[in-house]
Length: 254
Image (cartoon, rainbow, N blue to C red):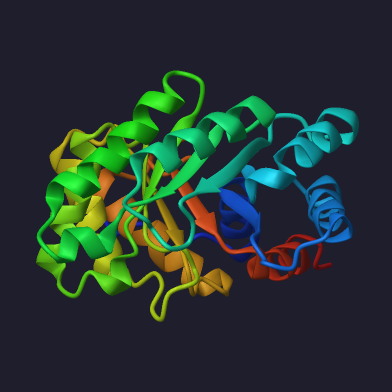
């Protein structure tokens, strides 16, 4: 008889989610003050998030601030060919190298989903391969599938397997800029694809994850598919800066 795990108490759940949180600031009108606020949010949080994710032009600012004020152990992530997912390997390689040189240790690259949907798998592969080569061993490569635009579960599975074939360290649901972001249904397909390849790749839910209950759903899926010890910050992330306030209130409740 299978044992069904009991839900985590709110405080324990909030701690688990915060440790896996990628705090993100990817606004087209971002200014230095907003990036500094993002860093300050990480510093003041009850425990450190997993990463801060910003556009490449802000990587050096975030890296300096973390090195100066902490918290220690927080990664700096950045994005390339974002959010359009252009099928330009040279652009992706160039943006990746620049972001890493500035201090990024994680790169979120957008799978060219339009090319894939049009049947041009080679173009999609070329972009992810270019990013993989540019990252080398210096940075994790998180491949954004834009799952809401892929149409069907079969499309999500095909994109997942392509990214895994090309050396993805994480599969990520969405840019957060598309019409449809993360869904549990797409996440299930992505997690099953990861499991089928041995569970070494991580998973990141992003786009539409706004509450602790939303985050808990993705954790439950990961636990059920890959086991209760799999979803640690090394392999599981939530991209949802809007969630930070609820996490802090939960952890600081009397």
